[in-house]
Image (tube, rainbow, N blue to C red; front, top):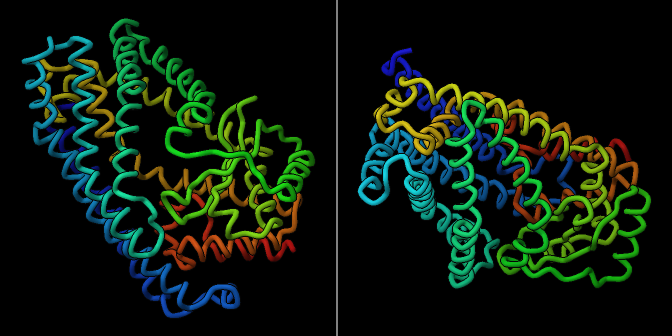
Length: 418
């Protein structure tokens, strides 16, 4: 393949991906607006028209910001590749670090990370202090936001930079099969992260206290016993410091598993509804959804790393993405691959979303067997209402981007099981 042909393919993929995303978001905006003035019949008795309108306006605001974000993100990728931005950064750093050295590679990837963060920062700020504040969800203060940024930067320096260095070293030292060694390192790192995240990293951002409600604790422990799930503890997280949104989740791995409730969730739901939400999460555990997803992601990652290994031997890959083959190196190859890959993998989004939605249905069905389906349905209705989640998503948009089934379909299934 010639560099010119690959450049054309990449440009076409980037343009089509952006076009598809913009069309899908426009459809979502139009669909939500068209149904703004009528609460869907299944929710008419539990969600007011005012709440429904709020959810519609919240969704539209997020979509409108998303269209700008997508356009600028695509322009940024094209500037770094076909526009020669990555080559310019490579040459600039060559004045400080020896070209091809590990230090040069880490500096190059770190510079790209900082540039990407700077591009995204205005959107994150507007999302938090504009949209989230306007709709009554943001509780983040500027001071806390800056503190979070400082902690994230510290973690990126202490963990991210050594990980990048290890990956680049493996790519350069392990011969033609470096991709296998990098894959094994990636698997080991992710498993280690599952162990250390709950104990060492998450507490840097939030306060976790043992569940103090004895009646709720007894209810939850009885559910865990019925489901055969062992946990290291039940904790409440001070999510209300940052947001009014509520959630519950599992974290950790093996003996380090924890169950975490947002304090906002406990404020909004009755004990039996909290139990039903937890039963849904236990459904993912029962059906081994996490392991299934990890298996698929791991297999895909191995294939993608192998593909990168092959592309690194093709001069057209570098020249076609705006980098001189003379500058070809492990860090440059990794950067180009990370920038270009999303444009070619976007068509797979509906498959992954569909698979995720099937997992959600399975978890709902499991919860309906362990608790009352009506309690889970009522909990979901409250969460849709309080989180301003739209009840009327565009079907095509939802098929691409929504990891959870549409509200009406999900609640209807639960009510039919009651």
